[in-house]
Image (cartoon, rainbow, N blue to C red; front, side):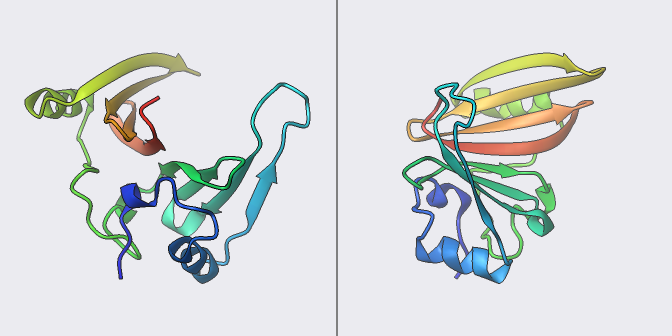
Length: 148
């Protein structure tokens, strides 16, 4: 059975779908704690480089963020095609899609080491989807529990 990215948000680290996925890809989960006493919450991080995925779990071991770094995996391997996650040619296309579909969104642009990085975040009640564009090309998608 194929998994859905958005349905994984809020899942427990030890939920059956995630355990199966992590076992299949020999994933190690790393516990990151606030070693410098900066009042940062502890978290758990897991990566599947072959799928271009990074999972961030909170201190309660619930999936809060999922970074999709390899856009070719959106509808491949263990994941079903998800109509909520789209690949846009550029930020303008993403903005137009949001407007046409009455999706609330925010946008930001910054310069990091000479690269124009544009982000557009679609805000939903239970999650957000952030599209990151580098040099006008879609570079990464981040989905987050909640719409912060």
